[in-house]
Length: 234
Image 1 (tube, rainbow, N blue to C red):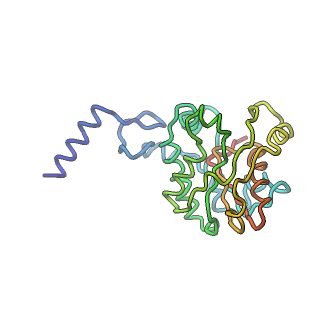
Image 2: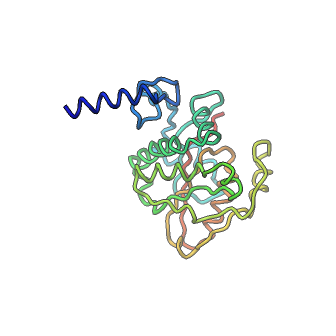
Image 3: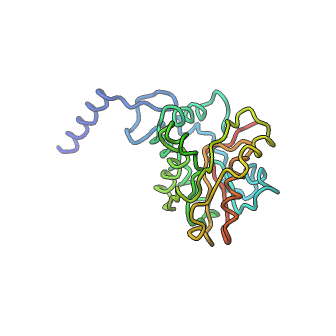
């Protein structure tokens, strides 16, 4: 009887406040899910977490001495992933970021090679930009990863010392110059000897992650890995 009443209550709640798939708009999904089964199946997983040498790893060859590197999805224009990223960054969908972070966390845990990671470090936004947006999408991703994988989030491990111009129309060299010296480690003693996993939403040229990674690796004994939600395809 109680189960029947709960089913009726859930049905009435769904009628009053329909929950739609963030991918296709279908309303036939549980309230705890952001994507229907079809859209989950269509997510463009890279599989990089299973392979030590992959495009993210190669991107940083000669730039950062990484232990591991991965990206969960391919990012292409006019795709479902672009739509999901737009909802996170511009519509404030923090729960969607946590949901996708949960997918990342489950894959990282299953891969095994990320097991030595001690803590998750979200790539920081400058405080003024974070206030304007309302949250840091990398931190929300880390929260989802933490729930699925159990690694702690150290959101204050590194800070942006100053705001930067947009990277969108800059060349690779200009992006690196724009980010040089922009990150500061707030408590180096806390990080000594730790294996940190630096998290961001999308990797393109890697200039911002490189600059942040250099600041972290300047702390004695720190080892570094990188994981992003997406990698720009093509």
